[in-house]
Length: 159
Image 1 (tube, helix red, strand yellow):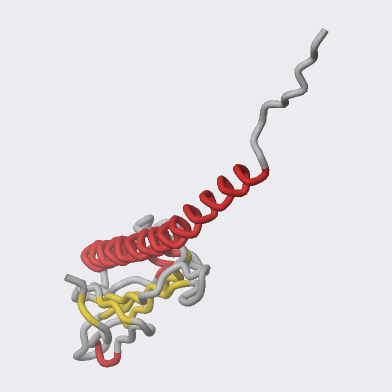
Image 2 (cartoon, rainbow, N blue to C red):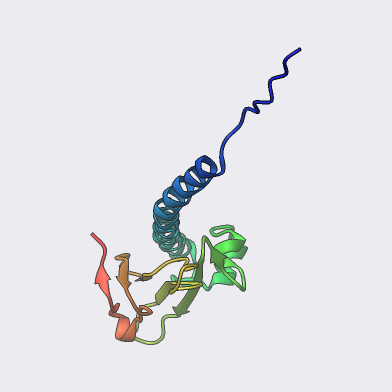
């Protein structure tokens, strides 16, 4: 009686080659995945600022005083959800801040809304650009926080 002692399987070299190939594919794919996530977060921030501008326009047109609203007023009027109008407004890796100035004698009401990334640098960055808008409705972006001194947005308008 003859016995066959051959065992079927992969050799150590073959397994190491497969692991190396998987490592190379992961090294290429992961940075692209993170960049895609940052781009999606930035797109969501832009869309959210458009939503805030629309909510402000609706609030102003229905307000008895013709003023823009604070985030709490927009939330109470059901024009914004709690992610954008709450005390800690945060959505898709961005922090949102809404400030408004009521009209006074001889001045018009105004508002300023901005979106700052939660983490702006490093591998875990949720976004690399900062965004802002005001009552005009143009959204500006910058690599540093967008400001609104004198009603003029800093940064570059989006196209």
